[in-house]
Length: 233
Image (tube, rainbow, N blue to C red):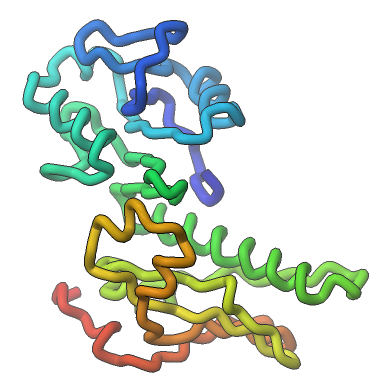
């Protein structure tokens, strides 16, 4: 999980139960206790379809009610939450899900943590696109991390669903452009459609631009209504 300062110390797997791993007798989920076990689980390449929720203390699982356990089952099966995905009893900071189309869905308790991950992901994806399109250049260009200030301007858009289309990105002269689209409303489309179909059903509302000469990011807004603050923040 690039951009996360500290790995969770304990995880509860929301996916199919592995009889070879430790199973919590109260919830029936596999659990991974301690930073070493968590790191081993997260870095195991065989665990491609990871679904998990972190928790503070193993004793906290014992006080989960049957209703709360059923909510966790629903979360791992339907890829969405019935109530808040953050539980007071578990004190979890994340929920990590792998959708049927291979996309990753992550809940973050704290926006500051999400912004850090977003910055790392957008910057690394742009760097990868740059290397592919400018493979003849021997020197590796160092990109500045995507700024939090611009991420905050996209808060409403991200809350409603945003797509960054790196497949249609362009580098012309000293400017790199990444189309920004608003995702379709249907949760079904988000869960099951291939990424290309998701992009086809999305609508462009702006562009992220990176100026290679000044090493600065810029947000170009094409549809102001998509960025309007509807949350009163």
